[in-house]
Length: 130
Image 1 (tube, rainbow, N blue to C red):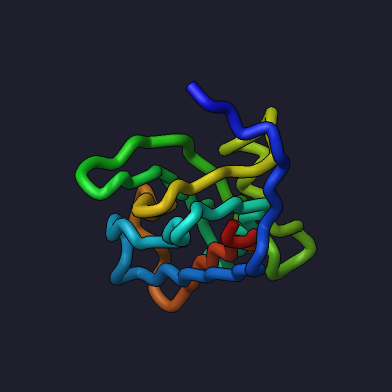
Image 2 (image 1 turned 45 degrees about the vertical axis):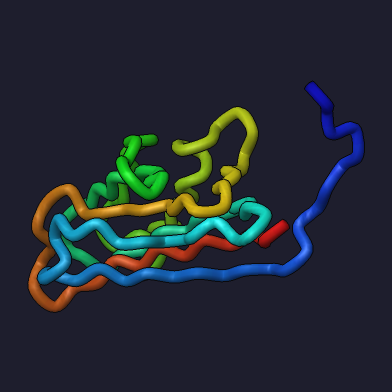
């Protein structure tokens, strides 16, 4: 089997964001779709102005099924008050510090429980397409 011995780098920067509100409680939403040659996600920042903690369940969808990769807990007011926003990458990919999404696959997330009326949770994924 031939091996790739040349390093490759992200070619086109990407920033994708998704917002969740009370109506999206358990709705799975696409955060990032893998580009033609795949996509590397270097950072996933999560914020909420909810007055209750928010748990986000992340998964990778390959076109036919989803594989759960982790749960990220957002404390009350994360990113909005004196509470820092949450870097989901430290939970989802603690060793590498990044995720690679192959072409045709998607990074998805959903709120585990109902959010408070009038409150929002935002997930921002930053990286690049190969």
